Length: 172
Image 1 (cartoon, rainbow, N blue to C red):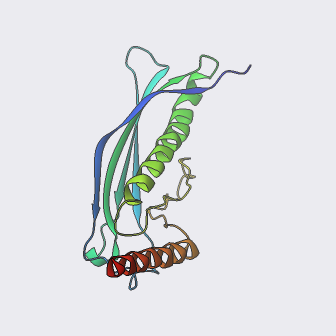
Image 2: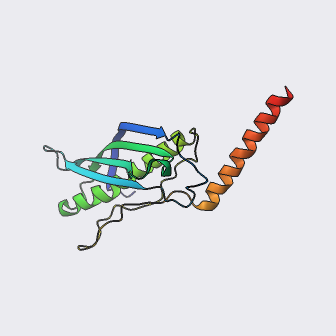
């Protein structure tokens, strides 16, 4: 059996802000991308160089209030251990790229759960990677939400459910 080069020992959310925007108008903002800004902080344990902490911050980009369905500000912390077979010089790259990806996946599922109970379409964070861009290039800050077809299907399904609910209320 092969060893796992990076082991997630624990992770949790240290900050959770998900606010639905009552001024959001989905019909007017269908074409607007949902902007998410990410920031990754990596730190090595002072006594054990094979133990690392990764903090991932996710925030909505600040734009006009009516363009964003939710205000999001999440911080997720994870604690990782690097296998002894990994070379020391490769550890920072491994921890940053893979640790941040693991936390991002956790944040994606968390946001989908929370916003799935909100008044607007749920937030699907797109796939991404946390590999450092080549020198001289900047990492893009904006990510887009679910494809338009999925959004339209969810909106029409939601409208149908609301109409059925209103019909059932009027019949009773």
